[in-house]
Amino acid sequence: FSSSSSSSFSLKHTVLPLKRRNCCLQTCFSVPYHKFVDFALDETNLHTHLLPSPLQEKYNSMNSTDGKGALNMLSFEAAKIRLLRSLIIETEKMQVLDFAVFPKAEYDVPIFCANFFTSAKTNIIVLDLNPLHDIINHDDYKEKYFKSLIPLGLKYAEHFPWGGKLTSESIKFFSPIVIWTRFTSSPQKYDILYSAFRDYYKVWLELIDTAVEETDEYQISRNLEAQHRYLAWRTEKDPGHGVLKKLIGDTLAKDLLRSFLFNGVDELGSKTFNDYFSHYLDEEGTLNKKGGVVGKSFENRPWDATGNFLGQ
Ligand code: BLA
Image 1 (tube, rainbow, N blue to C red):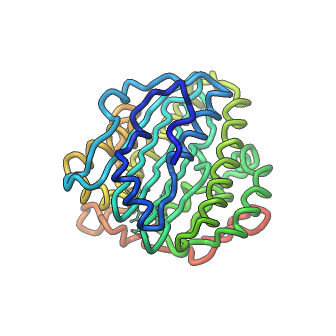
Image 2: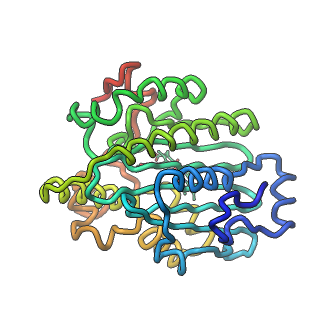
């Protein structure tokens, strides 16, 4: 547990009381997610100039209701980045990293997404460059960003087997190089995960670096709507909701989701979840919280080794 290596950020997120660190070490599943965030911030600063986001003032650190857990939040923006934000949760029972970077609407670059949930028993991992636009039906967008990345995906698919069935809608937000996996905790796995995180993040930085600013109003509004749709999906359906609710209560959890994690859901567009995902409405027209209409699918990785989609 080193403290922040990004000296330009004298932020509170790495300063945890000693007691908390010891208790993490004793449970033997400790994984230093701060290290991941420090890497990402340092690396981003090699490419662009990060500025603290206005969100930082309100969302920085808080304790769970029972006082036994800590939530640490960071947020920044940059020339091409609307929002880079991270949430780290540390309790006696789990550690969570939710790290995402949202490009400005002038760029159709994928959204960087790292969601790692670690408990004593298991790890639930999603690491991806979430495509902004449909890649299952639109080869041009897939070719533009993912064709050259397939070997990177294959390299890690070897270490991280497909995590099994997932909410079927989610697959549309994932790229052919998504790492969706579950594993039991081990230091070796975390080393590989850290390596994957660094590789994926470096690749994402290259994409945003070389991205050319869109000037066509129609394309910008398409990008904006795609981001808003993504935010609407995640605000409503993120499997982390339940955990957050337990930790900090319903009101704070909702606020954290809408205003911090998926910031923009109330500002970037006026469509609702129902407008975007009408197939989630059940016969009575109420929101089907369990997603039962669509259900879970994709027992196995639905892309072949060349990046072709094999699902429906
Ligand atoms: C489970 N998290 C999952 C699953 C996915 C994701 C695919 C498998 C279960 C399912 O699909 O219903 C993650 N899903 C995503 C992501 C996207 C998506 C990243 O659609 C992006 C488009 N997970 C978190 C956080 C917590 C968390 C912050 O990201 C906790 C605070 C917990 N995720 C968590 C837990 C489960 C889970 C506890 C298992 C519970 C379950 O299967 O519903």
